[in-house]
Length: 171
Image (cartoon, rainbow, N blue to C red; front, side, top):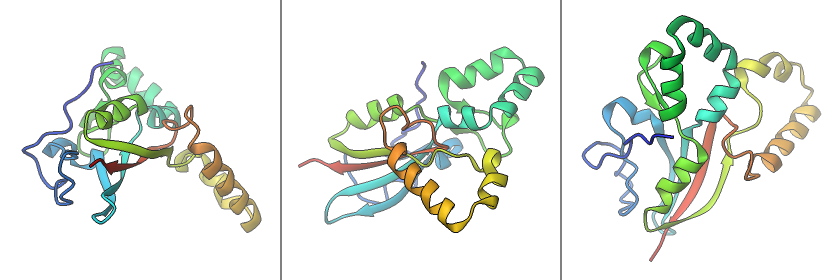
């Protein structure tokens, strides 16, 4: 797997948090790749979300095959290899999608510890929309509980549409 240089010290706006030592800045083309959801200055804890390459591929498999047929194997393989999604394969700006191993390795290079990580969920809105709409309140609560329980399993962290991580600055 080739890693993309998504964390660029010269870009804005991700260092607003003052979370020095963990550089969550992304270049202009990838600014939506990392979303800082919460920063607690007192506890030096950061909650972040990134798009998951595994989850986007699994949840959008029909689109991936359409792209394979339309744009060719080399174009789609480049996305699988790098996580970099170009505009021609998407309806939004170019972005980087992460594998859990890539995000974990990136975070571990900084003076912080990973408190926890999880998939954003185990169902995909575009695939399971009709199913979700048909659920009773009790079924929805049960499914939500299952997803919360299962999404943090080490083998499931990358399977959601997003990977959510909590990191705490050391020192």
